[in-house]
Every structure is written in structure tokens, then in C-alpha cells.
Image 1 (cartoon, rainbow, N blue to C red):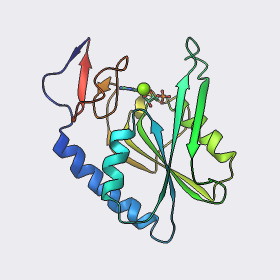
Image 2 (image 1 turned 90 degrees about the vertical axis):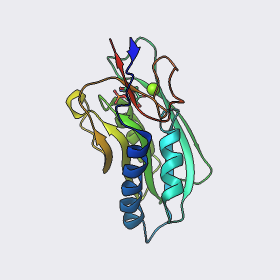
Image 3 (image 1 turned 30 degrees about the horizontal axis):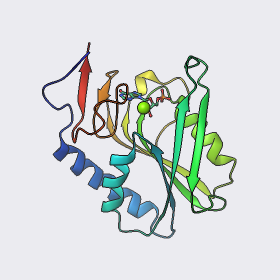
Image 4 (image 1 turned 60 degrees about the horizontal axis):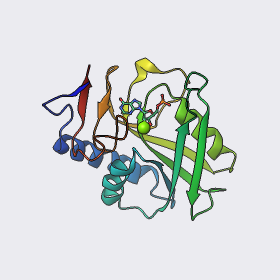
Length: 172
Ligand code: IMP
Ligand code: MG
């Protein structure tokens, strides 16, 4: 596996698109103070960039999902939830790095719904709809991409490349 020499999505394009997403999210939550739940670790850079651009007030929390080793095909997901705000009765926005099969998002949605939020919306920086197994969709998507393995801007390959400020393709 090797990293593409050229960015697949440049830092400038990321910033511009995230600004557009922020405008839509500001409008959708203008009457409320949502709880923004960042999915660790991959969505952290996206969430930081997005929240800097928002003008609404919000509370924050994090949620971490790990696939149990060796059970990827069953999609078992272990969840760590850490929010100072209670989610019950609140409007929640889940901030994801990428929707692939959708199994992680589906497990997170089920977990969050069990806390009885007033509403639950999802923003995902990237979306690979051709890979979907679970029927989940984001309310806002930064970039829809083909079936490629990408890294950077929080996304990793075996914990590498998260710190890149652009997104690159891992080429076989
Ligand atoms: P899903 O459960 O199959 O939708 O996968 C979700 C998780 O898999 C994401 O949150 C990422 O952590 C990881 N993932 C999926 N596709 C990629 C990719 O292209 N690059 C890096 N991580 C990915
Ligand atoms: Mg990951």
C-alpha cells in the first residue's frame, strides 16, 4: 500500500466544503442548542474545523466505536459514550468521518436513540454509498466518493496518516 503523491481532496477544498456544511447546520439548528457528538478518533479534525465555523450555540460530547476484532462481518461495535450534556430530549448531531458499510453508524444510532434524543441528525465528511450494507444515510455529506481507501484529516490506515491536513488515497 502506498500513499498517493497528490491530494485526493486538498486542505483548501476541505475548508471550503466544511464552510458550506456549517452554513446548512447553522440554519437547521438556529432555534436550538444541539449536542454535537464527535465520533472518535477519525472525525476529530473534521469536527474541530466544522465547530469553528458554526455560529450557533452547542454542547459537545464524544462517542467512540470499535469493531470487535475478527467480527467485522457481523458488525459488532463496542461503544464508549462521553457527553457532559445529557442527550435525552436534546437535538443531537452525530459528526462522522466516513460512512462505508454503515455498520458503525447504525450501531451508534441505535445506542444514541436509546437515550431518547429529541432528534438525531448525521453529518459525515465522506460517504461511500456503493459500499453500504446497513441502510443509513447522513443528513449532510461533504464529499461522495467511489470505493477507494482514503487517509488523512483524521482517517487512518492502522493508525497511520491521521495527521495529514489533506485527504489522500492509499493505492495497492
Ligand atoms: P463502516 O462501519 O463500514 O461504515 O465504517 C466506518 C469506519 O470505518 C469509519 O468510521 C472509518 O473509521 C473506517 N473506514 C471506512 N472506510 C475508510 C477509508 O476509506 N479510510 C479510512 N477509514 C475508513
Ligand atoms: Mg477508523
